[in-house]
View 1 (cartoon, rainbow, N blue to C red):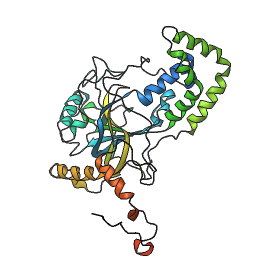
View 2 (view 1 turned 90 degrees about the vertical axis):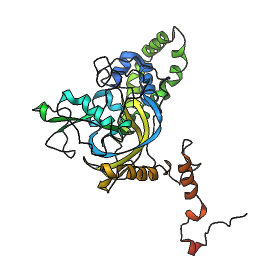
View 3 (view 1 turned 120 degrees about the vertical axis):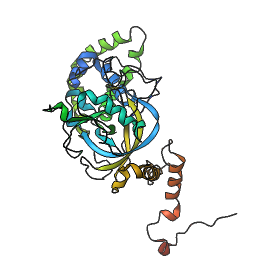
View 4 (view 1 turned 135 degrees about the horizontal axis):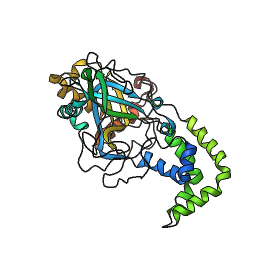
Length: 362
């Protein structure tokens, strides 16, 4: 099946701060509506699906070892609306080499990782907008928190230390810079579609009236209060209908920590928290059986070969009608054209059904 994709990304100059309160503000659907009306709910939907991700230049490929996972079970309250399944990737080659123990070396480890062969994927890009939860005291920079996983120095990536467990000794803990990747879940799309069906026409008309739109929206929310329970019941139903996560979107089976994998997806900057680069959505993921790809000597050649071949795969299956996505590369278009030629779509072997390529007319 095709990789799930519900979000879009915006140009860095088109990003708009949503002016939502930071921190654990939204506890439930009901509290969101109580705090700011249905219009706030739709504004959150717009931001989650079409506002918080900043485009960094198309699709990219990353190879590394799985360092940790983040699932919807790690979230609480309204944050569970975002039910993406996240993979934190320790980038090859040699992701654990050169690490220094202790929180005081967190930035040093980040700078070292940026200097490695795939470090450009996690390097802070220029002219990024200020993230929602950044600040002057944030490191590596006020606009870039990066993504890190804590690993005990006597362990390896197959036994990471969860972030919410205090370590006995800071001197025996690595703060490992990782590359974040998210397989998109469907809960936000379901809930937001239902909310749009109810409030969308008002949100896009009355609430947009200059000066008095916000006031009118508040009044309408009060008038519709008797119907709130029914609306919440509908939203709760579609919330439950959304899968708990989407880790197995292509039937590829489970992953575990320390697995060597290739991940291909849209390269973006997530401004919704402290700011970091990630692949979102993940469009392709596969295990790599060749351990030598993560060695310094072989990495350049094998990265080019693995990622080059994966880059030829269309993101829509060849059974789809209408062709591949409009943003397909020339290589993906060539693969699509080859897959859809009659001689490649037989049900019986060509020696049986007589399907052969048409003659070339010169």
